Image 1 (cartoon, one colour):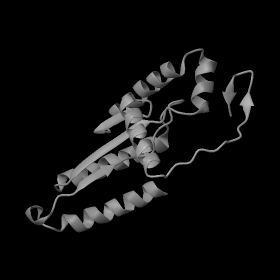
Image 2: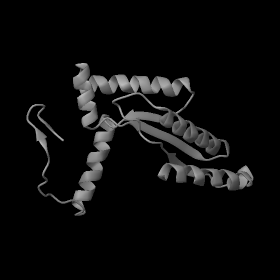
Image 3: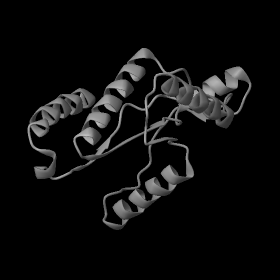
Length: 159
C-alpha cells in the first residue's frame, strides 16, 4: 500500500508542479524506490509493473526540474535463498549473483533505468546497516534479550 500512496502522491505532484513555470519552481531532491525483488527467483510481472511506474514518475520529476534518484536492490536475505541454493547444488552467493544478473537484464530489456540497482548483500549496504545499528545502540534504542527459535539439526538452520 505504501508504494501506491507514493505513486498517487507523485501524480498529484506532477499535476501541481507542472503548472508552475520552471524558473519559478524550487527544485526538490527526491529519493524513490520500489519493492525489492527477492533473489531466489525471477522478477515477476508485479515487480516489472511497479518498477516501470516508478521509473516513469522519476523521469517526469527530472523533466520538470527536480533532482530525482531511483534506487533499488535485490533482497538477498532469508531462508528461501538458502533452500533454493541447496536444491540447485550451488552456494547462496552464486544464486544471488545469478539472480542479480537476470533481474538487471529484465529491467534493461524494458528500458527501466535505476540510478542505483544493488543488493542487500553489498558491502555498502552492510556498512550502512552497521552505521544505523551503532547509532541506534548509542542512543539506547536497542535491547538484548533471549529469543526462542526452531532449529533443524539436519540442515543446521534456524527456521
